[in-house]
Image (cartoon, rainbow, N blue to C red; front, side, top):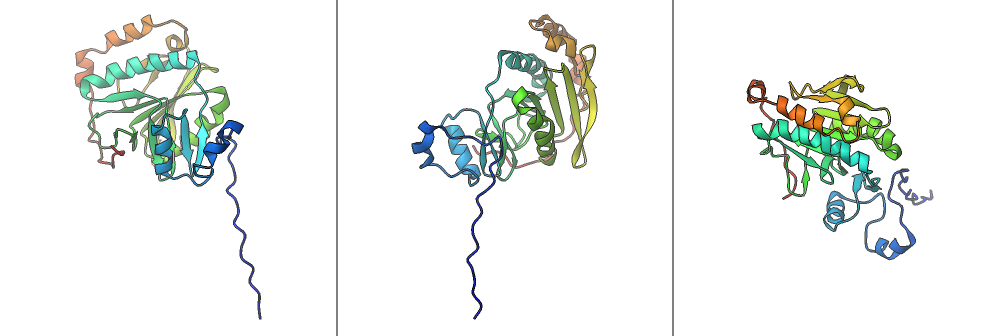
Amino acid sequence: MPTFTKPRRTAPVRPESAWPLRLDQQRLAALIPPQGTWTADDYLWLVRAGAQRVELADGWIEELPMPSERHQRLLGFLYRLLHAWLAPSGGIVVFSPLSMRVAERRFREPDLLALRDAADRRRGADFWAGADLVVEVVSPSSAAHDLVTKRREYAEAGVAEYWIVDGGAERVVVLALEGDGYREHGTFERDAQATSPLLPGLSVDVGALFDEGAWGAVDEALERFTDDAFAERVQPDQPERGAGER
């Protein structure tokens, strides 16, 4: 008679960015799911419990680097501009940490997330189920993640526009969704004004963005956002999508 060997179960392969456990976390590890088996509910429990900045990638918990002061200043500059542009017409922009679901078992925490309509059904209390525009400020330890992995994931999730802010190279790359992937709208260096296909009329002085303490440039940009500029903007109808959990 033929004999049958029970197949061996292969352990999931650990990504390089997966969350390593310290010795003082071993007891906690006995209470939480093994790496590679985390579900969306498990991840949201961890986020609600106040864990450090983490993302979920197909069952694996990935730890995000702690942002530097310059990282936060770049975000603050862009947040003020985007808020001033979006808020008067009913839009919203928020800082991380706020999770955005990009797939069934995949959550990311973009540095900035924006919706042109604050009543968009994708906006949830615990997480967003999508965004119109996201911004990532590149960290030295996560450059490949931002430039390759998240570019693919945000396109697959239907995010219309993705900005990659590279403080080391001092440039802003604006990507616009076209079909299933992104096309490069522009790579904007220090002497340029970064523009947005999604938000016509919006421009960002890249040199001022990267100059430490150039906050006066934000005020000058805000002064250009006149009522006439807002009135000229066309807001296409937003498709209804499932909202995040509330």
